[in-house]
Length: 465
Ligand SMILES: Cc1cc2nc3c(=O)[nH]c(=O)nc-3n(C[C@H](O)[C@H](O)[C@H](O)COP(=O)(O)OP(=O)(O)OC[C@H]3O[C@@H](n4cnc5c(N)ncnc54)[C@H](O)[C@@H]3O)c2cc1C
Ligand SMILES: NC(=O)c1ccc[n+]([C@@H]2O[C@H](COP(=O)([O-])OP(=O)(O)OC[C@H]3O[C@@H](n4cnc5c(N)ncnc54)[C@H](O)[C@@H]3O)[C@@H](O)[C@H]2O)c1
Image 1: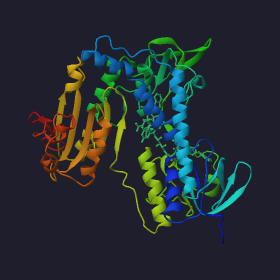
Image 2: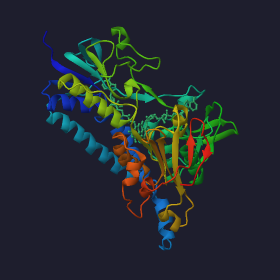
Image 3: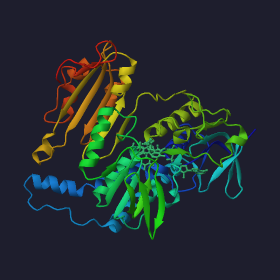
């Protein structure tokens, strides 16, 4: 049977673009790709990129305060001009969108600016009814924000809306306690909005190392976010052109309420069930180690599979898919070891490998930990503490976890990911001569474990790092 394409990709985000480009440019496959919105997907258009630029923008006042601490009397951030920032942001996203589109075109990928859905196991149907056949179909449609099911939730905004607002809200309620809620609260608070964060748990960033979670929670409060923890379900109602939220403390009025209560795979209406593609309860496409679904010609990568919902993971899955199917180089992705950072400020949370809690459950481990006030902020008059933690398997002495709470922690964890991926031991970390004075030198100078966890010696403090 002949097909229009060797590969048709649905979704021009992180995973889809990489898979299409590699299949076409490295392996000569004839590739078509459909994107219903802007090329680049969530990360480029309404996620990682605009979010991080906004984090940078939100720190002007903190930088001015630090400058004052260094003797720049009267240093001030000035007034934030949302319109001019927004214009620049739009231009940057358009530039990136162009780069993604250009990269695909240069690889001879045919782009269809349309929504696509499955017609049969080898055919996709575009919004105008056009049907295109392909030997392989890759679903890379990502996820969508998930609303929590509160009464009046239609009055709330989702993360996409932060990047489209005409003006900043004066008073804003952010609901949730994950990556997005913490980063958005940091941005909104830093840009000058009176920011309340309502979360149902007692510490933000569920899933991260508990010590890091506590520091992140305290830091949000310290920078001025009004944290409301252990909140029950909310109710929202209209209050003129504002929104009244019924919090545990009683009704309060906000200019905007923003939900950051998780994301769900965007599989609705794609025609997957009709074809017998196995889906998980939350709509995620169930795939094997090679990203192949229960229908052999259909593969899926990225957030739509709900494995690890991060851009570099989606990219790796897309690349591995192309290598496997078109390059005759079968590759799987190791989802057990990946770095992640949450860009709260002034100190980020960054992490790779086992948390202290996970390690304790798995067996005996040594925890090396250092908590200190970094010289840069200390000199400027800040009490903010940084924390570095290494989790070491007591038997093998391999470093199996690293957690950092500190300035540019994301940059540091990226480098720690290299020795950890190579299976480095604590002794090999220590063999590196420190770079002084840096924060990162703590990672190679912690001599004695702060405590042993898991097994008999658990929780016994044995020394000071
Ligand atoms: C606010 C926010 C901040 C984030 N920050 C980070 C971060 O700092 N670091 C990080 O690693 N990750 C971050 N993420 C997560 C990251 O964006 C995702 O993990 C990543 O984009 C997933 O890539 P993907 O290819 O699976 O899907 P996406 O990037 O979501 O791409 C899917 C694409 O498919 C298109 N599409 C969907 N359905 C169809 C259809 N039927 N037909 C045609 N096109 C379709 C969509 O328009 C979209 O462009 C963030 C996410 C959000 C929401
Ligand atoms: N820096 C980064 O790498 C980064 C940044 C943003 C997003 N992301 C990715 O995007 C994904 C989605 O982010 P997210 O923050 O929306 O999801 P998340 O899963 O990290 O957090 C969702 C939060 O909402 C809370 N929640 C869920 N239902 C609720 C309810 N009914 N009431 C109150 N709270 C409720 C959860 O307890 C959780 O704290 C992340 O898991 C991550 O993979 C990554």
